[in-house]
Amino acid sequence: MHYVVSATTNPAKIQAILAAFSEIFGEGSCHIEAISVESGVPEQPLGSDETRAGARNRVDNARLARPEADFWVAIEAGIDEGSTFSWVVIENREQRGEARSATLPLPQVILEKVLAGEALGPVMSHYTGIDEIGRKEGAIGVFTAGALTRSSVYHQAVVLALSPFHNAVYR
Image (cartoon, rainbow, N blue to C red; front, top):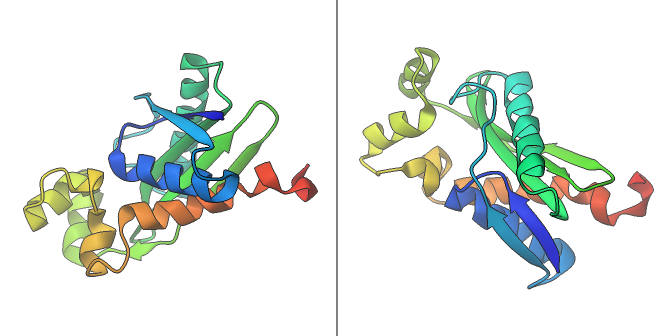
């Protein structure tokens, strides 16, 4: 049984982590503990580098908080070139896996508010009337009419970031 520390308490992100670990290592193969840690970047990271730094910082902070874990996982959502996306960073004691998620182009009316300093989650909650939308389907669910959700897109990125941990060619 793998002890996995999720560097977030966001249910959409935890669901993605659990689904990916179950797919790769088998159903019931891990126990996830969700903890809240600092990212060291603004609430709404801008650009790929700042977003990846936030995910890496969260993994470092989760590792400090729970050094006995087998895996530490962070998913940091950001805005880059007019789109929302995330970086996933996973570490164990020997290595790191990273993957960037698919991107969703944002409508100009939403993007303008985010670039003016507001975080995407609250902007989307205001736009849709869905409280704490970032902990649910997110902008991805809204703008894809439910065909994809925040969790389903993050799930793919977690699976990709797990590749080094179960394929010997990475070692």
